[in-house]
Amino acid sequence: MKLKDATPPDATFDPAAAAIEVGGVSADSRTVRPGDIFVALAGNKTDGARFISAALSAGAAAVMAEQKPAELGSAAFIQVSNARRALALTASRVFPQQPATIAAVTGTSGKTSIAAFVRQIWSELGLRAASVGTVGVVAPDREVYGSLTTPDPVELARTVDELAREKVSHLIVEASSHGLDQYRLEGLRVRIAAYTNLSRDHLDYHPTMEAYLAAKLRLFTELVSADGTAVINALDEHAPQVISAARRRGLNVITTGGADSTIAVEHLTRDGFGQRIDVRYAGKQHRVALPLVGGFQVENALVAAGIVIASGGDVARTFAALGNLEGAKGRLERAGVFHDAPIFVDYAHKPGALEKTLEALRPYASRRLVVVFGCGGDRDAGKRPIMGAIAAEKADTVIVTDDNPRSEDPAAIRAAIMAAAPGATEIGDRAQAIREAIHALEAGDVLVVAGKGHETGQIVKDRVLPFSDHEAVAAALQQEKAA
Ligand SMILES: CC(=O)N[C@H]1[C@@H](OP(=O)(O)OP(=O)(O)OC[C@H]2O[C@@H](n3ccc(=O)[nH]c3=O)[C@H](O)[C@@H]2O)O[C@H](CO)[C@@H](O)[C@@H]1O[C@H](C)C(=O)N[C@@H](C)C(=O)N[C@H](CCC(=O)O)C(=O)O
Ligand SMILES: Nc1ncnc2c1ncn2[C@@H]1O[C@H](COP(=O)(O)OP(=O)(O)OP(=O)(O)O)[C@@H](O)[C@H]1O
Ligand SMILES: N[C@H](CCC[C@H](N)C(=O)O)C(=O)O
Ligand SMILES: [Mg+2]
Figure (cartoon, rainbow, N blue to C red):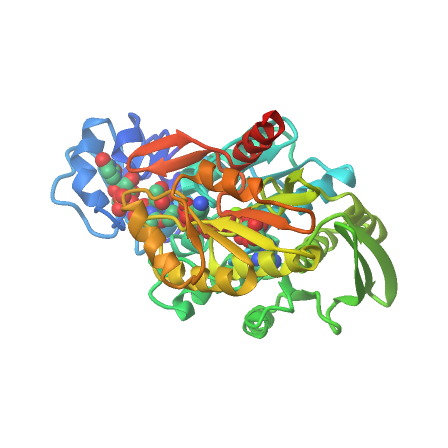
Protein backbone atom coordinates (compact mmCIF):
# COMPACT_ATOMS: atom_id res chain seq x y z
CA MET A 1 0.00 0.00 0.00
CA LYS A 2 1.06 3.60 -0.50
CA LEU A 3 2.56 5.56 2.37
CA LYS A 4 -0.22 8.14 2.23
CA ASP A 5 -2.84 5.41 2.69
CA ALA A 6 -0.99 3.75 5.56
CA THR A 7 -0.58 6.86 7.70
CA PRO A 8 -3.16 8.72 9.82
CA PRO A 9 -4.63 12.02 8.51
CA ASP A 10 -2.60 14.24 10.84
CA ALA A 11 0.77 12.78 9.76
CA THR A 12 2.96 15.13 7.73
CA PHE A 13 5.57 14.10 5.16
CA ASP A 14 7.24 15.31 1.98
CA PRO A 15 4.60 15.08 -0.81
CA ALA A 16 7.13 13.15 -2.87
CA ALA A 17 6.96 10.36 -0.27
CA ALA A 18 3.19 9.93 -0.55
CA ALA A 19 3.39 7.28 -3.27
CA ILE A 20 6.17 5.18 -1.70
CA GLU A 21 5.09 1.56 -1.38
CA VAL A 22 5.20 0.40 2.24
CA GLY A 23 4.87 -3.21 3.36
CA GLY A 24 4.01 -2.95 7.03
CA VAL A 25 4.70 -1.13 10.28
CA SER A 26 6.81 -1.91 13.33
CA ALA A 27 7.95 -0.14 16.47
CA ASP A 28 10.66 -2.72 17.07
CA SER A 29 13.84 -2.56 14.98
CA ARG A 30 14.29 -6.30 15.56
CA THR A 31 11.12 -7.14 13.62
CA VAL A 32 11.41 -4.55 10.82
CA ARG A 33 11.20 -6.01 7.33
CA PRO A 34 12.28 -4.31 4.09
CA GLY A 35 9.70 -1.69 3.06
CA ASP A 36 8.22 -1.25 6.56
CA ILE A 37 7.52 1.99 8.36
CA PHE A 38 9.56 2.09 11.59
CA VAL A 39 7.88 4.04 14.38
CA ALA A 40 10.28 5.41 16.99
CA LEU A 41 8.64 5.35 20.43
CA ALA A 42 9.99 6.88 23.61
CA GLY A 43 9.58 3.84 25.85
CA ASN A 44 9.55 3.02 29.52
CA LYS A 45 12.94 1.30 29.37
CA THR A 46 14.65 2.78 26.33
CA ASP A 47 14.06 5.14 23.40
CA GLY A 48 13.11 3.77 20.00
CA ALA A 49 15.00 6.68 18.41
CA ARG A 50 18.20 4.85 19.39
CA PHE A 51 17.28 2.03 17.00
CA ILE A 52 16.55 4.05 13.87
CA SER A 53 19.84 3.11 12.25
CA ALA A 54 19.17 -0.58 13.00
CA ALA A 55 15.69 -0.21 11.45
CA LEU A 56 17.19 1.45 8.36
CA SER A 57 19.75 -1.36 8.05
CA ALA A 58 16.84 -3.81 8.17
CA GLY A 59 15.34 -1.99 5.17
CA ALA A 60 12.78 0.40 6.68
CA ALA A 61 11.30 2.56 3.89
CA ALA A 62 10.21 5.31 6.26
CA VAL A 63 10.63 6.48 9.84
CA MET A 64 7.67 7.83 11.77
CA ALA A 65 8.49 9.91 14.85
CA GLU A 66 7.64 13.05 16.81
CA GLN A 67 11.04 14.57 16.04
CA LYS A 68 13.08 14.34 12.89
CA PRO A 69 16.10 12.09 13.39
CA ALA A 70 19.59 13.23 12.42
CA GLU A 71 20.18 10.29 10.10
CA LEU A 72 17.56 9.03 7.70
CA GLY A 73 19.55 7.70 4.76
CA SER A 74 17.19 7.39 1.82
CA ALA A 75 14.16 6.68 4.00
CA ALA A 76 11.20 9.06 4.15
CA PHE A 77 10.30 10.90 7.36
CA ILE A 78 6.74 10.98 8.67
CA GLN A 79 6.17 13.49 11.47
CA VAL A 80 3.40 12.86 13.99
CA SER A 81 2.38 14.58 17.20
CA ASN A 82 1.76 11.35 19.15
CA ALA A 83 3.87 8.43 17.92
CA ARG A 84 2.11 5.73 19.98
CA ARG A 85 -1.30 6.79 18.71
CA ALA A 86 0.02 7.08 15.16
CA LEU A 87 1.52 3.57 15.43
CA ALA A 88 -1.86 2.06 16.33
CA LEU A 89 -3.72 4.05 13.67
CA THR A 90 -1.15 3.03 11.05
CA ALA A 91 -1.44 -0.62 12.13
CA SER A 92 -5.20 -0.48 11.69
CA ARG A 93 -4.71 0.81 8.13
CA VAL A 94 -2.18 -1.89 7.30
CA PHE A 95 -4.56 -4.48 8.80
CA PRO A 96 -7.93 -2.96 7.92
CA GLN A 97 -10.48 -5.74 8.50
CA GLN A 98 -12.45 -5.71 11.73
CA PRO A 99 -15.44 -7.67 13.05
CA ALA A 100 -18.63 -5.57 12.76
CA THR A 101 -19.22 -5.58 16.51
CA ILE A 102 -16.33 -4.85 18.85
CA ALA A 103 -16.68 -4.43 22.62
CA ALA A 104 -13.89 -3.49 25.02
CA VAL A 105 -13.92 -4.00 28.79
CA THR A 106 -11.78 -2.18 31.33
CA GLY A 107 -11.49 -2.19 35.14
CA THR A 108 -9.07 -3.54 37.73
CA SER A 109 -10.75 -6.95 38.05
CA GLY A 110 -13.23 -9.00 36.05
CA LYS A 111 -12.10 -8.22 32.49
CA THR A 112 -11.02 -11.77 31.58
CA SER A 113 -14.13 -13.24 33.20
CA ILE A 114 -16.43 -10.85 31.36
CA ALA A 115 -14.65 -11.41 28.04
CA ALA A 116 -15.14 -15.17 28.48
CA PHE A 117 -18.81 -14.72 29.45
CA VAL A 118 -19.62 -12.41 26.54
CA ARG A 119 -17.94 -14.77 24.07
CA GLN A 120 -19.91 -17.71 25.47
CA ILE A 121 -23.25 -15.87 25.33
CA TRP A 122 -22.67 -14.61 21.78
CA SER A 123 -21.76 -18.16 20.73
CA GLU A 124 -24.92 -19.49 22.34
CA LEU A 125 -26.89 -16.92 20.34
CA GLY A 126 -25.40 -18.49 17.22
CA LEU A 127 -22.83 -15.76 16.49
CA ARG A 128 -19.16 -16.27 15.55
CA ALA A 129 -17.52 -14.72 18.58
CA ALA A 130 -13.96 -14.25 19.83
CA SER A 131 -12.11 -12.68 22.75
CA VAL A 132 -8.64 -11.16 23.11
CA GLY A 133 -7.07 -10.69 26.53
CA THR A 134 -5.00 -12.10 29.37
CA VAL A 135 -5.60 -15.71 28.32
CA GLY A 136 -4.80 -14.89 24.69
CA VAL A 137 -7.02 -15.13 21.62
CA VAL A 138 -10.02 -17.44 21.91
CA ALA A 139 -11.89 -17.83 18.62
CA PRO A 140 -14.16 -20.45 17.01
CA ASP A 141 -11.26 -21.89 15.01
CA ARG A 142 -8.33 -21.48 17.42
CA GLU A 143 -6.95 -20.60 20.83
CA VAL A 144 -3.59 -18.83 21.01
CA TYR A 145 -1.91 -17.92 24.30
CA GLY A 146 -0.63 -14.31 24.54
CA SER A 147 1.66 -12.59 27.00
CA LEU A 148 -0.07 -9.22 27.45
CA THR A 149 -3.68 -8.47 28.43
CA THR A 150 -3.95 -5.89 25.65
CA PRO A 151 -1.51 -6.90 22.89
CA ASP A 152 0.79 -4.33 21.32
CA PRO A 153 -0.98 -2.34 18.59
CA VAL A 154 0.55 -4.11 15.60
CA GLU A 155 -0.20 -7.58 16.96
CA LEU A 156 -3.68 -6.45 18.00
CA ALA A 157 -4.51 -5.01 14.57
CA ARG A 158 -3.11 -8.10 12.84
CA THR A 159 -5.12 -10.43 15.10
CA VAL A 160 -8.34 -8.44 14.66
CA ASP A 161 -7.86 -8.47 10.86
CA GLU A 162 -7.30 -12.26 10.93
CA LEU A 163 -10.38 -12.79 13.08
CA ALA A 164 -12.52 -10.76 10.65
CA ARG A 165 -11.17 -12.91 7.80
CA GLU A 166 -12.12 -15.99 9.85
CA LYS A 167 -15.67 -14.58 9.73
CA VAL A 168 -15.76 -13.59 13.39
CA SER A 169 -18.55 -11.00 13.61
CA HIS A 170 -18.42 -10.30 17.36
CA LEU A 171 -15.24 -9.53 19.28
CA ILE A 172 -14.56 -8.54 22.88
CA VAL A 173 -11.16 -7.14 23.87
CA GLU A 174 -9.71 -6.57 27.34
CA ALA A 175 -8.52 -2.97 27.64
CA SER A 176 -5.82 -2.82 30.32
CA SER A 177 -4.83 0.52 31.79
CA HIS A 178 -1.36 0.08 30.22
CA GLY A 179 -3.04 -0.63 26.90
CA LEU A 180 -5.22 2.47 27.14
CA ASP A 181 -2.40 4.68 28.40
CA GLN A 182 -0.13 3.50 25.57
CA TYR A 183 -2.83 3.90 22.88
CA ARG A 184 -2.62 0.18 21.99
CA LEU A 185 -6.33 0.07 21.09
CA GLU A 186 -6.52 3.21 18.94
CA GLY A 187 -7.89 2.38 15.52
CA LEU A 188 -10.22 -0.32 16.80
CA ARG A 189 -13.83 0.49 15.97
CA VAL A 190 -15.19 -0.06 19.49
CA ARG A 191 -19.00 0.15 19.68
CA ILE A 192 -19.45 -0.94 23.28
CA ALA A 193 -17.25 0.05 26.22
CA ALA A 194 -17.63 -1.61 29.62
CA TYR A 195 -16.34 -0.80 33.12
CA THR A 196 -16.10 -3.19 36.06
CA ASN A 197 -14.36 -1.56 39.03
CA LEU A 198 -11.28 0.26 40.24
CA SER A 199 -9.00 -0.79 43.09
CA ARG A 200 -5.30 -0.58 43.77
CA ASP A 201 -3.06 -2.07 41.07
CA HIS A 202 -0.17 -1.06 38.84
CA LEU A 203 0.96 1.86 41.01
CA ASP A 204 4.47 1.01 39.81
CA TYR A 205 3.34 2.39 36.43
CA HIS A 206 0.59 4.95 37.08
CA PRO A 207 1.80 7.72 39.42
CA THR A 208 -1.51 7.92 41.34
CA MET A 209 -4.93 6.26 41.55
CA GLU A 210 -6.33 9.33 39.76
CA ALA A 211 -3.95 8.75 36.85
CA TYR A 212 -4.91 5.06 36.85
CA LEU A 213 -8.63 5.96 36.65
CA ALA A 214 -7.92 8.58 33.97
CA ALA A 215 -6.27 5.91 31.80
CA LYS A 216 -9.35 3.73 32.12
CA LEU A 217 -11.70 6.65 31.38
CA ARG A 218 -10.03 7.11 27.98
CA LEU A 219 -12.05 4.11 26.81
CA PHE A 220 -15.22 6.17 27.33
CA THR A 221 -14.04 9.68 26.52
CA GLU A 222 -11.93 8.91 23.43
CA LEU A 223 -11.98 5.34 22.18
CA VAL A 224 -15.55 4.09 21.94
CA SER A 225 -17.43 5.53 18.96
CA ALA A 226 -19.51 8.62 19.77
CA ASP A 227 -22.77 6.78 19.05
CA GLY A 228 -21.70 3.77 21.11
CA THR A 229 -22.87 2.30 24.40
CA ALA A 230 -21.24 2.29 27.83
CA VAL A 231 -22.02 -0.62 30.16
CA ILE A 232 -21.09 0.27 33.73
CA ASN A 233 -21.11 -1.79 36.94
CA ALA A 234 -23.06 0.56 39.19
CA LEU A 235 -21.87 -1.16 42.38
CA ASP A 236 -18.34 0.19 42.09
CA GLU A 237 -17.56 3.33 44.07
CA HIS A 238 -16.07 5.07 41.03
CA ALA A 239 -19.04 4.24 38.79
CA PRO A 240 -20.52 7.78 39.08
CA GLN A 241 -17.36 9.23 37.50
CA VAL A 242 -17.50 6.74 34.66
CA ILE A 243 -21.24 7.32 34.15
CA SER A 244 -20.80 11.09 33.97
CA ALA A 245 -17.86 10.77 31.54
CA ALA A 246 -20.00 8.51 29.34
CA ARG A 247 -22.99 10.88 29.51
CA ARG A 248 -20.82 13.91 28.68
CA ARG A 249 -19.69 12.04 25.58
CA GLY A 250 -23.34 11.38 24.63
CA LEU A 251 -23.04 7.61 24.90
CA ASN A 252 -26.00 5.36 25.51
CA VAL A 253 -25.53 4.22 29.13
CA ILE A 254 -26.50 0.84 30.58
CA THR A 255 -25.84 0.45 34.30
CA THR A 256 -25.81 -2.94 35.97
CA GLY A 257 -26.01 -4.57 39.38
CA GLY A 258 -27.70 -1.96 41.59
CA ALA A 259 -31.34 -1.77 42.69
CA ASP A 260 -31.98 1.17 40.32
CA SER A 261 -29.72 0.04 37.48
CA THR A 262 -30.79 -0.50 33.88
CA ILE A 263 -30.15 -4.18 34.60
CA ALA A 264 -31.22 -4.31 38.23
CA VAL A 265 -30.83 -7.05 40.81
CA GLU A 266 -34.10 -7.54 42.72
CA HIS A 267 -33.23 -10.64 44.67
CA LEU A 268 -30.12 -12.76 45.12
CA THR A 269 -29.69 -16.07 46.96
CA ARG A 270 -26.86 -18.59 47.20
CA ASP A 271 -27.68 -22.05 45.93
CA GLY A 272 -24.83 -24.48 46.63
CA PHE A 273 -21.93 -23.42 44.41
CA GLY A 274 -24.34 -21.39 42.28
CA GLN A 275 -26.60 -18.37 42.76
CA ARG A 276 -30.20 -17.48 41.91
CA ILE A 277 -30.78 -13.92 40.75
CA ASP A 278 -33.99 -12.09 39.92
CA VAL A 279 -33.02 -9.48 37.39
CA ARG A 280 -35.18 -6.64 36.09
CA TYR A 281 -34.59 -5.10 32.66
CA ALA A 282 -36.97 -2.82 30.70
CA GLY A 283 -39.82 -3.54 33.10
CA LYS A 284 -39.54 -7.31 32.86
CA GLN A 285 -38.23 -9.79 35.38
CA HIS A 286 -35.82 -12.57 34.40
CA ARG A 287 -34.80 -15.44 36.67
CA VAL A 288 -31.17 -16.35 36.34
CA ALA A 289 -29.52 -19.48 37.77
CA LEU A 290 -25.84 -18.54 37.70
CA PRO A 291 -23.64 -21.63 38.06
CA LEU A 292 -20.75 -19.65 39.64
CA VAL A 293 -19.51 -18.84 43.15
CA GLY A 294 -19.13 -15.30 44.48
CA GLY A 295 -20.96 -12.00 44.47
CA PHE A 296 -18.37 -10.55 42.11
CA GLN A 297 -19.30 -13.12 39.46
CA VAL A 298 -22.88 -11.75 39.59
CA GLU A 299 -21.44 -8.30 38.85
CA ASN A 300 -19.37 -9.75 36.00
CA ALA A 301 -22.28 -11.76 34.57
CA LEU A 302 -24.58 -8.71 34.52
CA VAL A 303 -21.98 -6.51 32.81
CA ALA A 304 -21.58 -9.33 30.26
CA ALA A 305 -25.35 -9.46 29.74
CA GLY A 306 -25.38 -5.65 29.31
CA ILE A 307 -22.71 -5.89 26.61
CA VAL A 308 -24.60 -8.59 24.72
CA ILE A 309 -27.89 -6.68 24.95
CA ALA A 310 -26.10 -3.51 23.76
CA SER A 311 -24.88 -5.51 20.76
CA GLY A 312 -28.47 -6.37 19.82
CA GLY A 313 -28.68 -9.77 21.53
CA ASP A 314 -32.15 -11.12 22.35
CA VAL A 315 -32.85 -10.15 25.97
CA ALA A 316 -34.57 -13.32 27.19
CA ARG A 317 -32.04 -15.59 25.51
CA THR A 318 -29.17 -13.53 26.90
CA PHE A 319 -30.37 -13.89 30.49
CA ALA A 320 -31.12 -17.58 29.92
CA ALA A 321 -27.56 -18.07 28.62
CA LEU A 322 -26.16 -16.88 31.97
CA GLY A 323 -27.39 -20.22 33.30
CA ASN A 324 -24.78 -22.04 31.20
CA LEU A 325 -21.73 -19.85 31.86
CA GLU A 326 -18.39 -21.45 32.54
CA GLY A 327 -15.93 -19.40 34.59
CA ALA A 328 -12.70 -18.32 32.92
CA LYS A 329 -9.81 -20.71 33.56
CA GLY A 330 -8.39 -20.21 37.06
CA ARG A 331 -10.96 -17.67 38.19
CA LEU A 332 -12.43 -19.05 41.43
CA GLU A 333 -12.37 -22.45 39.77
CA ARG A 334 -12.92 -25.65 41.73
CA ALA A 335 -9.73 -27.63 41.20
CA GLY A 336 -10.31 -30.52 43.60
CA VAL A 337 -11.63 -31.67 46.93
CA PHE A 338 -9.89 -33.32 49.91
CA HIS A 339 -11.62 -34.64 53.03
CA ASP A 340 -14.80 -32.96 51.70
CA ALA A 341 -13.01 -29.59 51.68
CA PRO A 342 -13.22 -27.82 48.31
CA ILE A 343 -10.03 -26.46 46.75
CA PHE A 344 -10.21 -23.40 44.50
CA VAL A 345 -7.66 -21.88 42.15
CA ASP A 346 -8.05 -18.12 41.69
CA TYR A 347 -6.22 -15.28 39.91
CA ALA A 348 -6.39 -12.73 42.74
CA HIS A 349 -2.99 -11.02 42.57
CA LYS A 350 -4.11 -7.59 43.74
CA PRO A 351 -5.69 -6.44 47.01
CA GLY A 352 -9.26 -5.82 45.79
CA ALA A 353 -9.43 -9.21 44.09
CA LEU A 354 -8.04 -11.07 47.11
CA GLU A 355 -10.54 -9.38 49.37
CA LYS A 356 -13.50 -10.23 47.09
CA THR A 357 -12.40 -13.81 46.65
CA LEU A 358 -12.00 -14.46 50.38
CA GLU A 359 -15.37 -12.80 51.03
CA ALA A 360 -16.95 -14.95 48.31
CA LEU A 361 -15.64 -18.17 49.88
CA ARG A 362 -16.29 -17.29 53.52
CA PRO A 363 -19.90 -18.61 53.52
CA TYR A 364 -18.64 -22.06 52.43
CA ALA A 365 -16.16 -22.40 55.30
CA SER A 366 -17.92 -23.80 58.33
CA ARG A 367 -14.45 -24.50 59.75
CA ARG A 368 -11.32 -22.78 58.34
CA LEU A 369 -10.83 -20.61 55.23
CA VAL A 370 -7.26 -21.27 54.09
CA VAL A 371 -5.36 -19.13 51.56
CA VAL A 372 -2.05 -19.81 49.81
CA PHE A 373 -0.72 -16.80 47.93
CA GLY A 374 2.28 -14.60 47.13
CA CYS A 375 3.05 -11.37 45.25
CA GLY A 376 4.80 -10.88 41.94
CA GLY A 377 8.31 -9.42 41.76
CA ASP A 378 9.01 -6.30 39.65
CA ARG A 379 5.45 -5.18 40.28
CA ASP A 380 3.90 -2.58 42.63
CA ALA A 381 5.63 -3.41 45.93
CA GLY A 382 3.01 -1.42 47.86
CA LYS A 383 0.50 -4.23 47.23
CA ARG A 384 2.44 -6.67 49.41
CA PRO A 385 1.61 -5.52 52.95
CA ILE A 386 -1.93 -4.64 51.87
CA MET A 387 -2.51 -8.16 50.59
CA GLY A 388 -0.88 -9.61 53.71
CA ALA A 389 -3.26 -7.65 55.92
CA ILE A 390 -6.30 -8.64 53.85
CA ALA A 391 -5.34 -12.32 54.02
CA ALA A 392 -4.77 -12.15 57.78
CA GLU A 393 -8.12 -10.43 58.31
CA LYS A 394 -10.28 -12.44 55.91
CA ALA A 395 -8.80 -15.95 56.13
CA ASP A 396 -8.21 -18.24 59.12
CA THR A 397 -5.00 -19.85 57.88
CA VAL A 398 -2.55 -17.94 55.68
CA ILE A 399 0.38 -19.51 53.84
CA VAL A 400 2.67 -17.02 52.09
CA THR A 401 4.55 -18.42 49.11
CA ASP A 402 6.19 -17.35 45.83
CA ASP A 403 4.41 -15.97 42.76
CA ASN A 404 6.70 -14.98 39.89
CA PRO A 405 9.55 -13.35 41.87
CA ARG A 406 11.11 -12.25 38.54
CA SER A 407 14.34 -10.30 39.19
CA GLU A 408 13.65 -9.78 42.90
CA ASP A 409 14.74 -11.74 45.97
CA PRO A 410 11.73 -14.02 46.71
CA ALA A 411 12.44 -14.02 50.45
CA ALA A 412 12.25 -10.22 50.54
CA ILE A 413 8.87 -10.25 48.78
CA ARG A 414 7.55 -12.85 51.24
CA ALA A 415 8.93 -10.86 54.18
CA ALA A 416 7.02 -7.76 53.06
CA ILE A 417 3.79 -9.77 53.02
CA MET A 418 4.53 -11.63 56.27
CA ALA A 419 5.18 -8.37 58.14
CA ALA A 420 1.53 -7.46 57.67
CA ALA A 421 0.09 -10.94 58.20
CA PRO A 422 0.50 -11.95 61.84
CA GLY A 423 0.24 -15.71 62.32
CA ALA A 424 0.93 -16.53 58.69
CA THR A 425 3.21 -19.41 57.70
CA GLU A 426 5.96 -18.89 55.14
CA ILE A 427 6.69 -21.66 52.61
CA GLY A 428 8.60 -20.31 49.61
CA ASP A 429 8.27 -23.38 47.39
CA ARG A 430 4.78 -23.02 45.91
CA ALA A 431 4.23 -26.74 45.30
CA GLN A 432 5.17 -27.51 48.89
CA ALA A 433 2.93 -24.72 50.19
CA ILE A 434 0.02 -26.26 48.27
CA ARG A 435 0.87 -29.77 49.52
CA GLU A 436 0.98 -28.66 53.15
CA ALA A 437 -2.25 -26.68 52.85
CA ILE A 438 -4.05 -29.67 51.33
CA HIS A 439 -2.59 -32.16 53.82
CA ALA A 440 -4.12 -30.21 56.72
CA LEU A 441 -7.62 -29.88 55.20
CA GLU A 442 -10.61 -31.28 57.07
CA ALA A 443 -14.33 -31.30 56.36
CA GLY A 444 -15.71 -27.77 56.68
CA ASP A 445 -12.47 -26.17 55.42
CA VAL A 446 -12.12 -24.30 52.14
CA LEU A 447 -8.77 -23.74 50.43
CA VAL A 448 -8.01 -21.10 47.83
CA VAL A 449 -4.69 -20.98 45.99
CA ALA A 450 -4.54 -17.41 44.71
CA GLY A 451 -2.48 -15.34 42.28
CA LYS A 452 -1.59 -17.52 39.31
CA GLY A 453 -4.97 -18.63 37.94
CA HIS A 454 -4.43 -19.88 34.36
CA GLU A 455 -0.65 -19.32 34.41
CA THR A 456 1.60 -22.20 33.43
CA GLY A 457 4.96 -20.91 34.65
CA GLN A 458 6.83 -19.55 37.65
CA ILE A 459 9.06 -16.66 36.53
CA VAL A 460 12.34 -16.76 38.47
CA LYS A 461 15.01 -14.33 37.24
CA ASP A 462 15.03 -14.73 33.46
CA ARG A 463 13.64 -18.25 33.49
CA VAL A 464 10.06 -19.45 33.26
CA LEU A 465 9.87 -22.72 35.20
CA PRO A 466 6.86 -24.87 34.32
CA PHE A 467 4.29 -24.47 37.09
CA SER A 468 0.53 -24.71 37.26
CA ASP A 469 -1.59 -24.38 40.40
CA HIS A 470 -4.06 -26.84 38.88
CA GLU A 471 -1.32 -29.42 38.39
CA ALA A 472 0.20 -28.77 41.80
CA VAL A 473 -3.21 -29.34 43.42
CA ALA A 474 -3.73 -32.54 41.39
CA ALA A 475 -0.24 -33.81 42.30
CA ALA A 476 -0.80 -33.11 46.00
CA LEU A 477 -4.14 -34.94 45.92
CA GLN A 478 -2.47 -37.86 44.16
CA GLN A 479 0.19 -37.98 46.86
CA GLU A 480 -2.42 -37.96 49.63
CA LYS A 481 -4.24 -40.82 47.92
CA ALA A 482 -1.06 -42.86 47.63
CA ALA A 483 -0.10 -42.25 51.28
C1 LIG B 1 5.76 -1.05 30.82
C2 LIG B 1 5.10 -1.45 29.55
O1 LIG B 1 3.89 -1.56 29.50
N1 LIG B 1 5.90 -1.70 28.51
C3 LIG B 1 5.32 -2.09 27.25
C4 LIG B 1 5.77 -1.10 26.18
O2 LIG B 1 7.15 -1.10 26.14
P1 LIG B 1 7.91 0.27 25.82
O3 LIG B 1 7.30 0.88 24.62
O4 LIG B 1 7.96 1.11 27.02
O5 LIG B 1 9.31 -0.36 25.39
P2 LIG B 1 10.84 -0.10 25.69
O6 LIG B 1 11.39 -1.43 26.03
O7 LIG B 1 11.12 1.05 26.57
O8 LIG B 1 11.38 0.27 24.22
C5 LIG B 1 11.07 1.49 23.54
C6 LIG B 1 10.95 1.23 22.07
O9 LIG B 1 12.21 0.79 21.56
C7 LIG B 1 12.00 -0.31 20.72
N2 LIG B 1 13.22 -1.14 20.60
C8 LIG B 1 13.79 -1.68 21.72
C9 LIG B 1 14.92 -2.48 21.59
C10 LIG B 1 15.48 -2.71 20.30
O10 LIG B 1 16.47 -3.41 20.10
N3 LIG B 1 14.86 -2.13 19.24
C11 LIG B 1 13.74 -1.36 19.35
O11 LIG B 1 13.24 -0.88 18.36
C12 LIG B 1 10.85 -1.04 21.38
O12 LIG B 1 10.20 -1.92 20.47
C13 LIG B 1 9.96 0.12 21.78
O13 LIG B 1 9.12 0.50 20.71
O14 LIG B 1 5.23 -1.49 24.93
C14 LIG B 1 5.62 -2.80 24.51
C15 LIG B 1 4.94 -3.05 23.15
O15 LIG B 1 3.56 -2.77 23.25
C16 LIG B 1 5.19 -3.84 25.52
O16 LIG B 1 5.62 -5.13 25.13
C17 LIG B 1 5.76 -3.51 26.89
O17 LIG B 1 5.16 -4.40 27.80
C18 LIG B 1 6.03 -4.95 28.81
C19 LIG B 1 6.77 -6.16 28.27
C20 LIG B 1 5.17 -5.37 30.01
O18 LIG B 1 5.57 -6.18 30.84
N4 LIG B 1 3.99 -4.82 30.14
C21 LIG B 1 3.05 -5.14 31.23
C22 LIG B 1 3.35 -4.37 32.51
C23 LIG B 1 1.66 -4.76 30.71
O19 LIG B 1 1.52 -4.07 29.70
N5 LIG B 1 0.65 -5.18 31.43
C24 LIG B 1 -0.70 -4.85 31.05
C25 LIG B 1 -1.66 -4.98 32.21
C26 LIG B 1 -1.85 -6.35 32.79
C27 LIG B 1 -2.87 -6.34 33.92
O20 LIG B 1 -3.91 -5.66 33.84
O21 LIG B 1 -2.64 -7.01 34.95
C28 LIG B 1 -1.13 -5.70 29.83
O22 LIG B 1 -1.95 -5.19 29.03
O23 LIG B 1 -0.69 -6.84 29.75
N1 LIG C 1 -15.87 -8.03 39.50
C1 LIG C 1 -14.85 -8.35 40.30
N2 LIG C 1 -14.61 -7.62 41.42
C2 LIG C 1 -13.59 -7.93 42.25
N3 LIG C 1 -12.75 -8.96 42.06
C3 LIG C 1 -12.94 -9.70 40.95
C4 LIG C 1 -13.98 -9.44 40.02
N4 LIG C 1 -13.91 -10.33 39.02
C5 LIG C 1 -12.85 -11.10 39.29
N5 LIG C 1 -12.27 -10.75 40.45
C6 LIG C 1 -11.04 -11.30 41.08
O1 LIG C 1 -9.98 -10.93 40.19
C7 LIG C 1 -9.34 -12.09 39.68
C8 LIG C 1 -9.03 -11.88 38.22
O2 LIG C 1 -10.25 -11.87 37.50
P1 LIG C 1 -10.22 -11.60 35.93
O3 LIG C 1 -9.11 -12.35 35.37
O4 LIG C 1 -11.57 -11.81 35.41
O5 LIG C 1 -9.87 -10.03 35.95
P2 LIG C 1 -8.94 -9.15 35.01
O6 LIG C 1 -9.49 -7.77 35.13
O7 LIG C 1 -8.89 -9.72 33.66
O8 LIG C 1 -7.53 -9.25 35.71
P3 LIG C 1 -6.05 -9.03 35.02
O9 LIG C 1 -5.92 -7.56 34.81
O10 LIG C 1 -5.16 -9.53 36.07
O11 LIG C 1 -6.01 -9.83 33.79
C9 LIG C 1 -10.31 -13.24 39.93
O12 LIG C 1 -9.64 -14.45 40.03
C10 LIG C 1 -10.96 -12.80 41.22
O13 LIG C 1 -10.12 -13.05 42.31
N1 LIG D 1 -0.72 -9.04 34.14
C1 LIG D 1 -0.31 -9.06 35.52
C2 LIG D 1 -0.36 -10.47 36.00
C3 LIG D 1 0.20 -10.73 37.37
C4 LIG D 1 0.05 -12.15 37.81
C5 LIG D 1 0.76 -12.54 39.05
N2 LIG D 1 0.87 -13.96 39.04
C6 LIG D 1 2.13 -11.86 39.16
O1 LIG D 1 3.05 -12.35 38.56
O2 LIG D 1 2.21 -10.85 39.84
C7 LIG D 1 1.07 -8.46 35.66
O3 LIG D 1 1.93 -8.79 34.85
O4 LIG D 1 1.25 -7.64 36.54
MG1 LIG E 1 -7.40 -10.10 32.36
